[in-house]
Image (cartoon, rainbow, N blue to C red; front, top):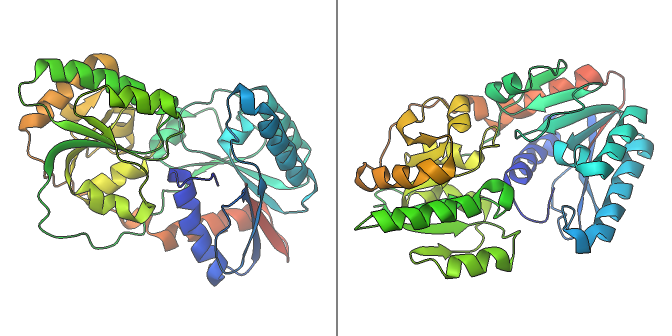
Length: 341
């Protein structure tokens, strides 16, 4: 779990609350995470010995290497029946290959959790989890795989909130999320609009000054900082539309939250394949070319959408039951342990 509450970290936090509180007492759950990320969860032991900057640039490679060595040690010698690991640690450049080798040599059964479309190698030898049927189809060559949906602990929303003439991006501020392409598209859109919508960004800024300097020089765009995960759906209500420029998503939590808030979604067509109720007219293939026109369409569109989406599949108890069933199936025995990394 990273030092900021990204989508995967939120998902695991919801799952751990239920598994740790006695949902299934066949498991001892141990979480390897970064310093300062320990949380209070009954039945869950947090090892927050990893250093920050696990996905660091060159100047942080020493910390990154130490983290990977720690993960490799846990994979090989923790004695856990199940190791549940996020794909980004397995496929992370050359050192990620060492993680893969450790997983192959480990006495533990391995679950690799894939939540985006970045990966093209090493789809063998372990069990895999995907967060949508479409993502499962995207990685069609992987055989030992199941679909376990994103858990959503939804609360009642505020009533009678009038959306402003604004768009919002919610998520990690990172190059692979398409934020720079979104800024370029927004600049092009403003040049073609007489009454442009404003654009706000929320999330952990992993790009630092590269992002903040760029935003500060674009009229109508602003970085609003970080929101607690539980506050996102209510904040979405204040905006006319949510825009998601990334083409790599599997089942983005913020799109599900926008569905729940009945707000317009501008996203890549790959997201619509996972969530077909999103209108095709608001999807794109090429953000740089198509997003300016989509934002222009959003100016005159009604902010309120009725999607008719079935959220029951995202019930946290349903999700936890499916995950516990997977653990028990791959690691039979009287005493079971699970460690998530």
